Image 1: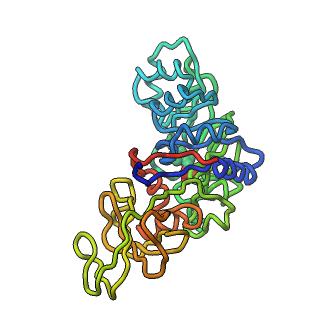
Image 2: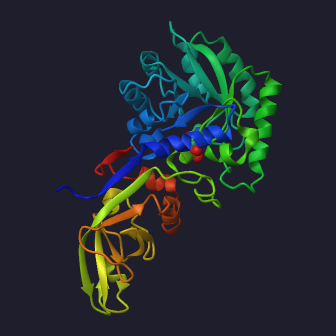
Image 3: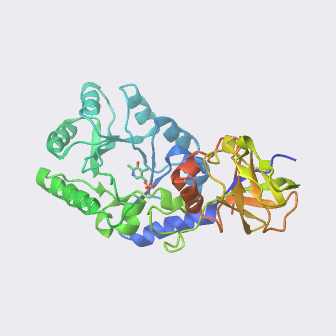
Length: 359
Ligand SMILES: *Cc1c(COP(=O)(O)O)cnc(C)c1O
């Protein structure tokens, strides 16, 4: 038998979550964001399950080529654009649409003598201060893009820095600044602002295209709302089994560093899943897991291939199922214990963990 750890990927949950994005922004087209291997879920599985999306977005040309070779025909947007002049041939060969965020990229476009033109997404920086043209530069960038033979249609976009916090006033400011810049410069383009938090929390941001990422995978984009209240379904069930169950005496320690000391004689289970699989090494004792569908706690340090769990409150034997997160144990809850976010938990799932489609 093979090692029991696997990431089950629910196709119907992906489709449900896409529909939730459409319901929240019924007038907008959807760019499904599937960078970082579909947030760790397997980009090809995700793209095929979401084949009703209007477009896809990825971070690299390699990811985009992978999608084209898997038969994806929708527009594919490169969120970091292209990096040098040689990339332009690949944009042509695979029909890709770059984000244009710097004068450096515009210079490359101006100097390249292309016989082919593509759509571009001009990124305006309204407060994230990562990628994009400042509002001062936007007029010049727009004019120069207009003059480029390689540019077919210009779309305009921006990205939010604080939309995960619905009380934060900077999102409304970013929306207003984006709209004002479009108007002042006289930009005639379809527009896109909203990530998942914008879609669910800021209706003013919906515009022509929405860009859902994390909500598609069934995790919350907000610090204060759980997926149940947002009607999202978890897509990944990270599941394994107990590979050992034993009694450890009171006062004895469990695992590296002896960090957990048994307060009484107790049953300890060992689960095949560790930081070598992407489970967070800094998850502390008390982080929840489901054993046979019942809540139990991680105890002691996370090892490379295993974790140990407290079985005092569970009926459990070797071979019984364990869920690290998924249906009944939101990744957001595990992330909170591990002082991270579900995005990182998903992205960190190692290549050695098989992704298995579940209808
Ligand atoms: C990753 C990303 C998104 C999706 O963000 P979520 O918070 O996962 O919804 C949208 N737009 C851009 C530019 C991104 O980089």
